[in-house]
Image 1: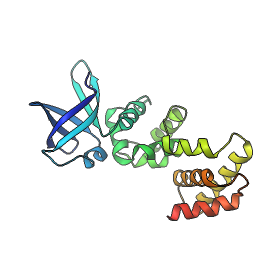
Image 2: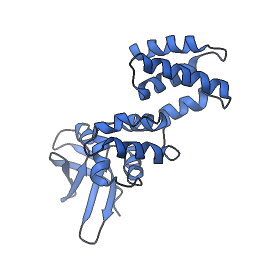
Image 3: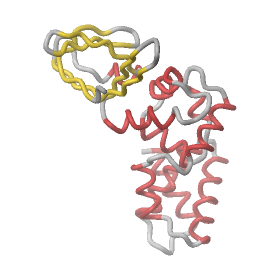
Length: 202
């Protein structure tokens, strides 16, 4: 089982690369986002690898870091999401953007990906809401939103207000979470909205 490849970037295709490791060329499929992050052809490169072994083929999928690889595997636990669709999602959204969409239960950003319609996007956010690693937003929420219903209610009200002003659920959710992390415990909904607007404008 191949878990990582370190070698020379020999060739770059539209959705794949060839990595030369001591004279052996490995064909690796990647998302568009991963391809954009690669060094120039002929330079050293390291990719985290997910190996798929089937009766009729062995496919290697490459990622810039372990978190991207973990998302690739997790997305495929959802019915209707195969390797191609998972790469499409990762081409359209970063790992943090995927995590924030799921944390906010906002399926709309996922529909930017090729092959993902509203029905599948809703299934993804529903099925992964308790499984998804959300390091950035999750850490902010853990630090800023205590279990008390009052704090959760204030957060929901502030998010709703920002959405009424035209912001998407995911970006409103993320802004309020970041604001609550920095706000005093006695902050009001109004102050959260005001600070959230400043956060979104920055």
